[in-house]
Length: 98
Image 1 (tube, rainbow, N blue to C red):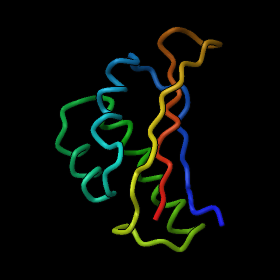
Image 2: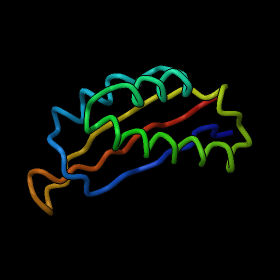
Image 3: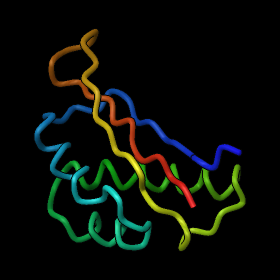
Image 4: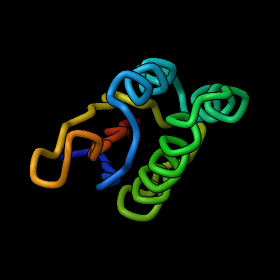
């Protein structure tokens, strides 16, 4: 059984370094801890990544019947989209598992 839920945010205009700093805050943390980290960080990437985290949590709750407290963020990857411009990023965020 595949007990992973994912969410992807595309075409975000943020530098890769700033987005990676925010992604490093939540890797391997539980969802309540990751949400708290992103809420109180002053990073632009934190605001963007929180939306993606919330989407992944909602996907896990609906598709996997998981509880928010039991989820852990496994992976948070950033991929550059070369078609638009150097500034466009795709935050393929947050594989969740429980």
